[in-house]
Length: 97
Image 1 (cartoon, rainbow, N blue to C red):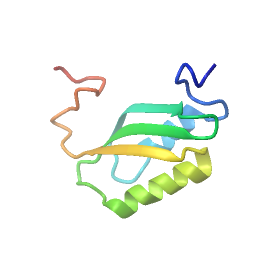
Image 2: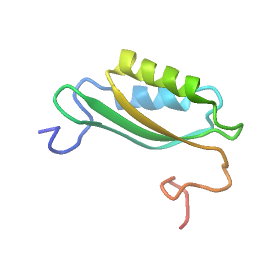
Image 3: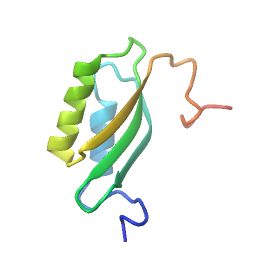
């Protein structure tokens, strides 16, 4: 049922995932976080991280993806980095379009 509803898979604590991502070095904001089951064995994540000091690079993203896999069983992560906090993403909670 959870798979059909694209709900957060059982056993994944979304608030723990949110705290991990929001606490990443250089991140000042996290928004548009989604976690859902792609199948009975694969879990996906998308998130937007605001990082005003610039894109942290591929090694940073690889490390985040490794940790998401190891600690949260999320094997398919897509993370969008936004560097300009003044140009809010249309999906950010306080943005006006």
